[in-house]
Length: 198
Image 1: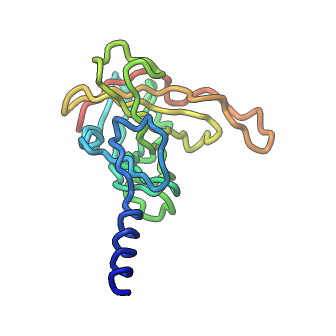
Image 2: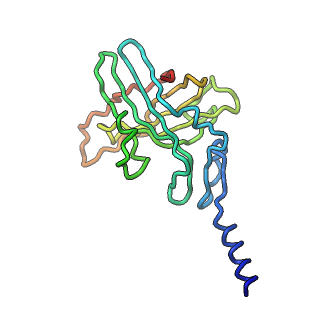
Image 3: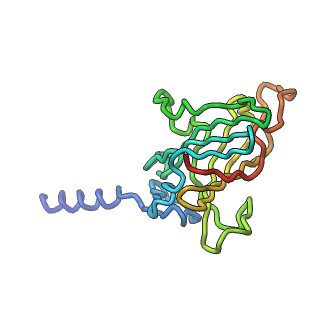
């Protein structure tokens, strides 16, 4: 009886162990309880505060890395972030940077930037200047005053002190309560920003 119990314990512990899938190889079907792990610490290239400056226009992003985030049926290492955007007229349109230290969020995905989908060179949006084998990271990107807009950003590591951040529409806006008169222009221009670490 004791031997049967030991065998059952060993089998249970082996079946509970999650399958690890490297972050840059997450194109496979994800089995239940798998862990998409940043095995190369690639996400660390984006952690910190970054800034784009062009005259009075300024775009600042602060990223942090979350280890082993539970999506329910799988786990994944992800990035979260908050940002500030000052338009060319010097007007601050969005500033959520203080929310990076807000521990009252019920879930890390409530941050204005969240996720970590790896993209290869020709995946949308394509990156012809990327090297073969290089990959980028896509995150969801939210405008807190226009939550109906479907936005995303793609991050590319250029050097330890410089990244490229591309803002774009991910899909059509999803208006709530039939409020089709809500403004739908992007407050943060959809373009590519070269950001320096600060």
